[in-house]
Length: 514
Image 1 (tube, rainbow, N blue to C red):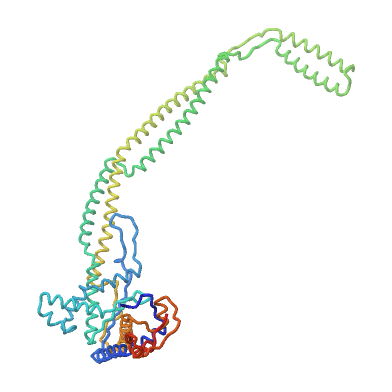
Image 2: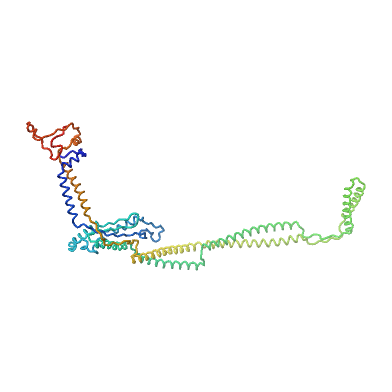
């Protein structure tokens, strides 16, 4: 029966375990250490070849839209690019191709016989060789850079360098196959097809323009709208002038009704001279009276004399004016003649303005009809232009992608890539001696294995070595310990207890009492 799980090891129990199982611990440790020393004297010098690759940005890691799409490009992060290249490097098929190229017998002579047998044995030998190569291959990114470091260990420095360089060369070839752009022929054929269709669309559009004698429907419509707007402005001006001329004609005709056609030209009388003389004398007397009133009062004798003379002259003028004319001549009224001429001119203006108004109305309707008549051809024209533009866009897209594919294929043929070898592997001149490491690992492994063996043996015991362990195991306090001596109990007639474990500093002479 094993020790209860509640038993815990303290420092005292641990030291007791080491002392009690010292022979077992020493035996296990020495055995493993001696084995490690023997192994360390075997040929263990390894030569590590190293190579470095620089990964640059390129279009291979850019998501480009398909032809006809307008979405932008998306680029990968630099760290992901480096990891992608490392995954291509860490490829079993690539490693197997490298081993076959360098030579399985040269790299791993122990597997050469199985490989020569063929069949399943050859496949198993190649798999073992790939596993061995993968275990010794190191592929890691250099911190804070886009450099990938490769390292490979082998007993032969020349084989280490050759294997690493061959792997790099095969990797470059492999990535060219992975990122190869073989679509230039297809893109070129599509470009030619769209070029032919674009030429046909251009010919249709040109024939349509020649048929309708229009280069741009938009400009033609704008021109017709401008002309129609000008005609409407002229129509409004003509209407305004017509209303004005009509109003003036009505006013002239109204005036002609109140003006007589004939009017007396002049009349002759016998007293005409005397009457004119009297009027002049009357004016003279009026002026004389005004001068006297400025100097004298109205009752002044001088003023009264002038007023009496004025009265006599006025009576004379009234008597002479009442008499009829002697000779009277009548003729055409010049005012009426002028009004008649003005009416004739205004009637002509009104007729001309009405004719102009009707002509402008007809022209406006014609312009509107021509503008409306352009709608149907315009739809056909827009359809042809849209077809031409789409074909042109597709042609330009395929032309650009075709040229890009051609350049990429040329780069592939020239073995130009975004991965540069900044350091090729060279045969190392100094190997790595692993003897101290093997001995150190033997010491550590021996100590760990010895302790494990001691704990296993201690767990298999049915006794408790210390009072503290008894308290932890039983959950009861230990009141004291009593020494034990073999044979004492038997001499007193009591049954002897089972012998204690040898090697314990506590158990041979005493037992704990709870």
